[in-house]
Length: 432
Image 1 (cartoon, helix red, strand yellow):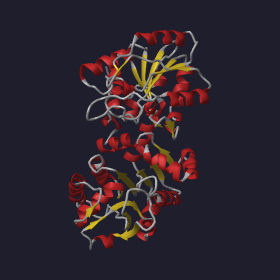
Image 2 (image 1 turned 90 degrees about the vertical axis):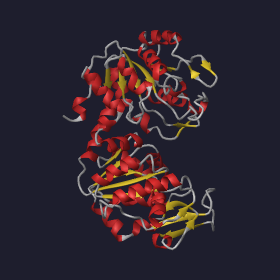
Image 3 (image 1 turned 120 degrees about the horizontal axis):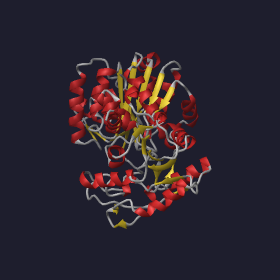
Image 4 (image 1 turned 90 degrees about the horizontal axis):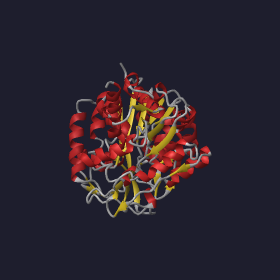
């Protein structure tokens, strides 16, 4: 039985007169501004369905990282507020949405969901407002606290509603609002969650040849999925800092900005990759820069991989050069692929864009392949650098853009969507 068949689904429950708590991944705000509403738009089908079937909606999402990982302090500020999301939904859907406020304690954020929200729920039931949008879940102390604090917060959230719907595929971390609310309410998968899982199957059952392109800023966060892709894909291309670490490890080279830990992880990866000869396609040209302060004339240059073999130390590698994608073997790998998975920004944004543009344009020349893009930065850079292609990709059956790149990699590493804790929790709830 596949994962979709195991899931409790929103379309299978009577929503009439029910308050429905919906966890979404509307994490699209940076410093108070929405740069791309794609993840919001992808949840509108679920919201419309709830409304059409007589349900009343309470929304919640996390925004950014208001909690300092070292100190545990939570900072409540406009930079991580849901207000821009609320304003966007109000204008797009022509509805009235209210956002409650609660008592905040310095450094600890909101300590609880207070009973003051009950007057808004009464207004919601009486059709005086159309929806409630809770403040950023990460502003609440219990969201990431773990233990009894997390359980208490989840219980308070569940007390607001009759039904819980998880439509936040991209929010794969096991926090109170994604995995603990299920303990207290009947829980179902929204339409976006179902769609993402359906498209994950196109990776698991990829038509061959299967090409994967993965970039990242740290090797240790990607090494698990990379091991899985070495086993599954026919070809694997690296970019970003993980490619820099790979080159440093392979050639015994010191590259500015690449940590010893990343190089150690790259050595493990190279050792494992020896079991799969020919799978890694090395891109032949990179861009070295003397500075991180932008693309400064006279301070950057293109180097070939052959050049690196004769060097002991170089400055920052901040991009894959476009010449890499003009190589005949690389062209053939892209041309012949039947499935292409991309979770990659090749250069150091916003100034080093050549590699990402060349990559995306080359992918688009293969008109027959299924092209699956991870979310997050991969999606945002496609929109920023190639807006025309981005618009085509959203509507093309040959493309699919996931809303959560990290969630896709987690699912690839686990070999099944059921390795993602919120999805596993939904399935467990159905079987109770």
